[in-house]
Length: 163
Image 1 (spheres, rainbow, N blue to C red):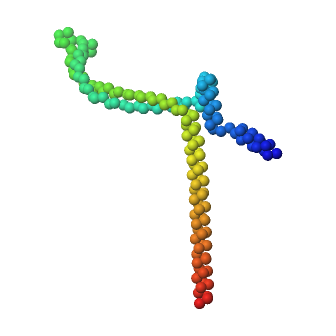
Image 2 (image 1 turned 180 degrees about the horizontal axis):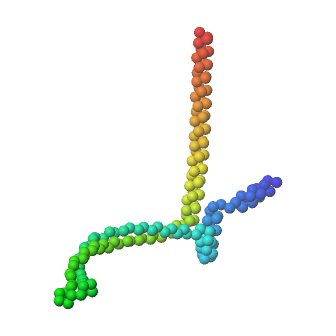
């Protein structure tokens, strides 16, 4: 009977699948079938692409351009003796601004992100458990304080009555 109990215990504990066993199995599968494991990881945890676009404007300097323009007034007034051509100066300003657009593409590993989220949720759970534990110890300390006060007060009262 004792041998059967030992045999059942060995069988029960030998069937446990631990994290170490899973890691070894994945490494072994990746060593023999890298395309399959890579494809599985790519479909399960696709990379997250995000594009950040930065636009900035570099202002140029104003340039004033002066041109002389010859205006022929012969079409308006027909004067054959005098020339009806007038020269005027024409000023205009030009400014050339430069627009620079930078696009940055970030690729994020979602498997790593999911692992960090799991770790974060585990840490939050540990923090909540610790806060509950601290509240219980504070309540326990308060109970001991009141118990000490009651025992001290009753001892003083008994000693005062016996006098």
